[in-house]
Length: 493
Ligand code: HEM
Image 1 (cartoon, rainbow, N blue to C red):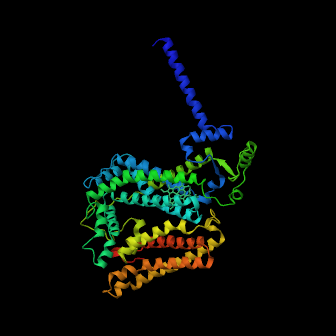
Image 2: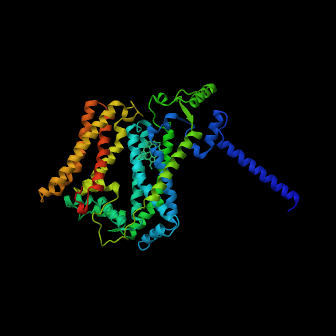
C-alpha cells in the first residue's frame, strides 16, 4: 500500500474512533442541561422504556421490594441459560434423559447452567406471587392500572405454564409423573360429566387431556408439545406481555405512589440540588411530584445492581445445590406419592376431595376473583399506601387469624374424621362436588369479605380481607401438599 493510502486509512480509523467516542460520551456522560439529558434518554432504546424522570420514592426498597425487577432479572437469566441448554438437549423420548445427563456430567459448565435454569424457574414463580401481593397490598391496580393488573395475571399464567412445561423435559420419573398428575387434574371435568351421566356423549375431561398431551398419556406427543411451548410459544408471549406490562407502567405515569411520597423520601443534598436546578430552569412541574430524579443513570444502575445480585445469589445457590434428576421415566412404575409440581400441590390437595372442585371450579373462581378485584374496588383513597393505612393493616391481621383458624381446622378435621365419602360411601358424586373442604372454605372466605364490607363500608377493606384469605389459604394448602402428604396421599407429620 502506498504512503498516501496508509495515511488515508489512518485518518479514517481516527475519525471512526472519534465518532465512536463522541457517541459513547453522548449516552454515558451526564449531559449538561435537563433538556439535553431528556434528549439523550429519548434517543436511547434502553432508557426509552422508562420516563425521563422518576420519583425518588420509586427506588425505596420497602415500597416495591424490587420484586417486579427481580422477576424480570430471573426471566432474562432463564432465557440466557435456556438457550445454552438447547445446544445439547434433544426432545425425544429415547434421548431426552440422556442428553440431560450429558449436560449435567459431561458438558463443561453444563451442570451449573442447568442448576441455574431450574432454580431460577422455581424462584420466578415465588417472586411473581410475592409481586402480586405487593401490587395488591399497595392497591396499585386502580384506575389506569387495571389493564396492567390483567396483563400481570396473563403473565402469572404464562410463568406457571413455563415452569410446568419445563418439568417434563428431563424425561425422568419426577417430571413424568408430575405431568401425568397435573394433566389428570386438568382433565377432572369428567368428574362432573360422570356425576351428570353425560360422559359417554361428550367426554370433555379426556378432550382436555388430549389437547394437553396430544394423546391419552404422557409420551412423545406430549414431549413435542411441551418443548414447543417451552422454547418458542411461551418465550414469545412473555416478551410481548412483559413489553406491554412495562409500557403500561410508563403510560400510567410510573408506579402508583402514595399521595405523600414527597415527604416520605429522604432529603439528600443531591436532591435539593436537582430541585433548585428544576426550579431555575422554570419547567412546569404542576402535575408531578417535586422529588424526582433522572432515570439515567440512577434507575439504570439500580436495575443493573438488582440483576447482578440476583445472578450472584443464583450462581452461589446453583453451585451448592443440584437440580434433581431421578431415574429415566418409566410409565409402568408409578411414583408413590405421585406429586404434581409444588405450586400445584395445593390444588392436588383439594383434588383429593373432589377432582372437579379442586382441579377446575376453585382455580376458576380464584382467577375470576383476581380479575374482578380492580373492577369491584374503585376506591382511590390511600392508593399506593401499604395495606391502605392503619385500618387495612387491622383488617389484614384479622383476616390472617380468620383464614388460619378456618383453614387449619378444616384440614385437621378432614385428616382426623375423613369426609362425606368415608361416612356415606353411597353418597352421590354431585354432592361431593358441591360440598367439600375447598368449596366450604371458598364460601367462608367470601362470607368473611362480605362481613368486612358491611362493617367498614369500604370495598378496599373487603378486597384486602378476600385477598388475604385466598393468599394464605393457598399457602396453607400448598404447604400441606408439599410437606404433609406421603405414600398413598396419607397425612404425615
Ligand atoms: C413475568 C412476570 C412479571 C414481571 C417480570 C413483572 C415486572 C414488573 C415490574 C418491573 C414492575 C415495576 C416495579 C415493581 O412493581 O416491582 C411491575 C409493576 C406492576 N406489575 Fe408486574 N410483573 C410481572 C407479573 C405481574 C403480575 C402477575 C401482576 C398482577 C396480577 C402484575 C401487576 C403489576 C402492576 C399492576 C404493576 C404496576 C404497579 C404500580 O403501578 O405501582 N405483574 N411489574
